[in-house]
Image (cartoon, rainbow, N blue to C red; front, side):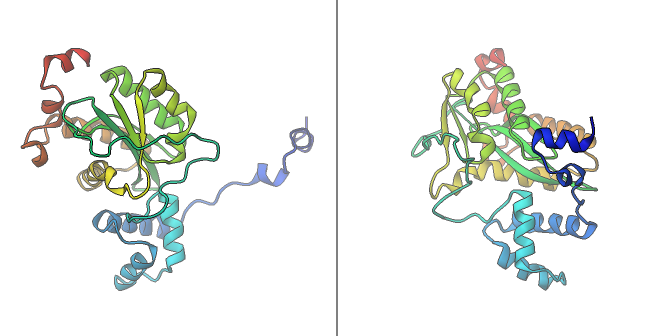
Length: 264
């Protein structure tokens, strides 16, 4: 069957079948890496001010191009605003449950987030699931696209290895409002919480993790990214002392009781 006939049967335009996305230039990849570094250091700056800072460094770039690259990377300035990450049309939005909640034990609250990850050639996306009490990274996945599937894989691994939390908190991004992601939580009677208006500060613990991941580890190819992150998160959980945990490691805090060790 010819390609023309196949496209007619499926109602597709032939040009879309032949189209191959143009890869990003080396200049744009280098620019994205620098934008990400500036965003980590100054997360409150938007595209307009980041463009000004880049011009001071000798990089001629406009705010619109900076804004386009930020959207591609999945990052934005942190500030109080009317709406947070936009969910997919038709997806359910859950109420925010962490207001005035004291987080006092492991598996009380888990959180998930996605970040852009620069590599030697190109970039990838990283999703991680974090226990907020102990700061322990429970699972992670790497993908070359911001899809729901790699988020669901990370969730299923965390639930299989560490049981179920009482509350699971995310932003309102389409990956987390998708039914494929929320259904496993609902099946286990886990209360789903989503950041709402003005709740940018709720991701501060995950943002600190992203800063550590990007400053303390280097990445080359997608396969090496996974291997490097596996090694790094083992170091992060088991050996790296945290000042906020009174210089204990996340594993020491998470597994402080025999019950948690048996559950894992």
